[in-house]
Length: 72
Image (tube, rainbow, N blue to C red; front, side, top):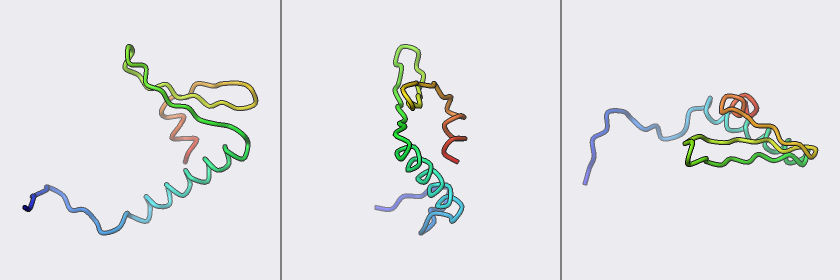
C-alpha cells in the first residue's frame, strides 16, 4: 500500500535541527550536573502545560518560551 503526502520526508534530519538537539542535550546535561530538574505536567482543568525548574531548594515556573530559551 502506498500513501501520497503533500511534502517530502528527508532521509536524514537537517543539520540545523541536529545542532539544536545537541544544544538542548548539553543544557539538560548541565542542569543534571547542577542537580536541577525540569518537571512538566498537564493541568487538565485549565488545559495548560505547567513547566517548573527545580534548583537549590526552589521552584520557578517557566513558560513554554522560557523553556525553549533555556534549551537553546
